[in-house]
Length: 254
Ligand code: IPE
Ligand code: IPE
Ligand code: MG
Image 1 (cartoon, rainbow, N blue to C red):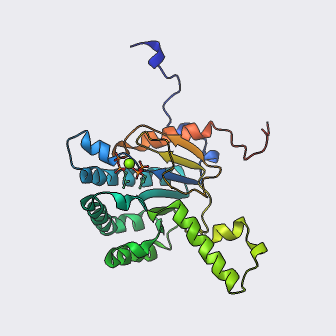
Image 2 (cartoon, helix red, strand yellow):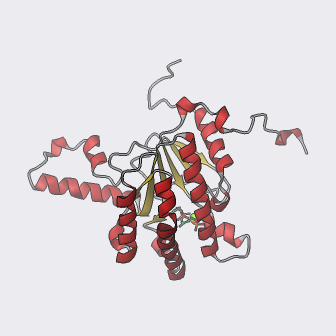
């Protein structure tokens, strides 16, 4: 093997990370389930099922590292374009996960939030999801924000519509619309913006995810398919993040 393959940076562990520079909010585009399954000659749904294991690992690892908010892109407004049987399999898997994971979320002190248009979901699934949100509401270790039937543009349109209604009702002057007001009407209201956005599966695009909120997020793309994503991949992303200099439009302060 040639020396060019050698990466001199030590493998990141919890101990090599700077605990004062852990991102408060990590958002993940969990991509590559279908290709993971295809590489094994399995149906795409098997990839989604395997992806659930990666979700569990990532929740645990984020909690252990002191991340406060983890947003996971689970189903986009555009994912309805997939074959009906794949959409059905994804919805079924979500229903199963709500039942199977409830106790673990409570035990781990995880507070579930949902971002997206839930009105389009099967009423039973919607009710199950909302019950789990209510059940985990007092939990304080980690906010798990699941983006479900989520679209960044749809979210902005919905916020604009609510603001317009307030203006029409005379509760808000047009000049009173500012970034704080817009933030307050997004699905993610009350959450800090993501500091770090990770996309697995090798593609380098946003696919309509958190368009407003990622204005100053650090972007990290990795080739690993989502079902293979584990703690070492998360720690590598955190180590990379800790080498970034975030300037927010300003100048270096050192
Ligand atoms: C991501 O994996 C999961 C969802 C979008 C629900 P994909 O299903 O997009 O997997 P690939 O990109 O086809 O491999
Ligand atoms: C983004 O992945 C959506 C989710 C991970 C839920 P996609 O696989 O749907 O994105 P594109 O189609 O490759 O842009
Ligand atoms: Mg994909």
